[in-house]
Length: 231
Image: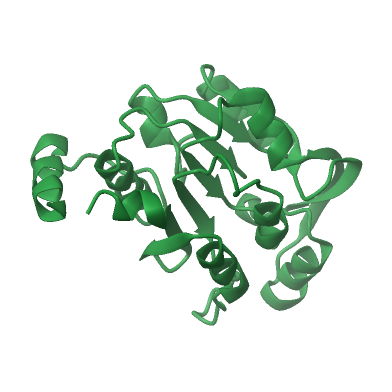
């Protein structure tokens, strides 16, 4: 059954572009197609650029809509302008609501973070620079989901440089659950010595998700029960 679905999807979809770092969006699209979600909603936490190395732009192009969160004011402006039909929020996401939290903007935009230890590590171990420390309000995933989604987003992309476990722990996974998570699960390194975030993997697998694919930098998780029902 699953092989038949895969073959139908390959011929119908015909390949197509990917905007993710390692083709994650194509894998996620296949998963969602198989479990019967043709027009998924999404929550993109740490969206960064609206198109480049972005896990949700493929879905936006296909007519899907969601919420994109980016704390960097400069990147947020670009995101808002390029994705006018998404809800774009210039805030951070964390385990609790807070006001004026220090946000460390790095000279490499993809490494900007609310985690001071991570920012210092980038400086000390990798020669990066902190170009500015901004004060940004932080809200919780539950607040975003309650305000902007009916139930839950179908797909969550999470790229937050060191705060993955805190944010995942703030989702309500006991009721309405996202079908798919795509989470950055390796620490930053330029020499291949990045360490896998096993605590993140263990948390989601313990919450009833299975690892569907690992693209080295990102891991894709799917709700086990929803996937098994399709087999």
